[in-house]
Length: 192
Ligand code: GLN
Image (cartoon, rainbow, N blue to C red; front, side, top):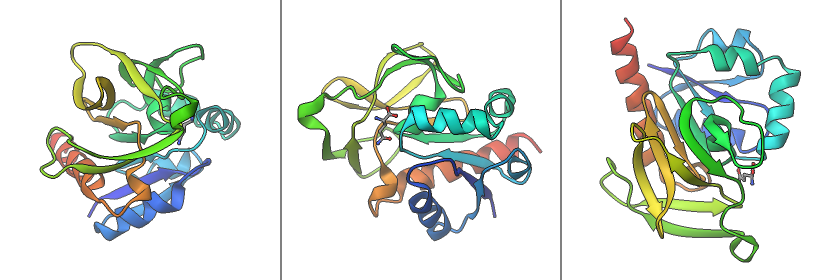
């Protein structure tokens, strides 16, 4: 059984824990460098990326996370912003995925919305809830684009990293978490 950490700085932490445990994973809420020792993968929840960044600095987690080279990570919404190599108008955070994201990119009029979203590699459309969501503005060619909403990129995969601009953890749709656990399993086979 895999053990998945959920970054416990701020945001939708419990919701991710619930989904991962429903799928049979063990979970650890990560708040210190020691917590990183025991995990096979890490979820970065949605919330507010600027607040999360301040907490990552305060808890001394930014550099250790930047240096981790084989740990699979799954960022949702603000978590996607944390994974991007570039954030328009802001300093980048963990710099794991060669892409540029734009925060709050869907505009004030459409602060939040929900769609059934086709996602490459997942059979049924995913229930996707967008809340002040980012968009991916540019990706390097090696990044795999998994989903788009009206030509805006909203889900990507690159190496052992998965990111989406919506919140799968606020629905009952387990498909993206299942997809991530499969990535974690594959990564373990690769690194034994
Ligand atoms: N707007 C938030 C940010 O820029 C992300 C919103 C979310 O995670 N729901 O960090």
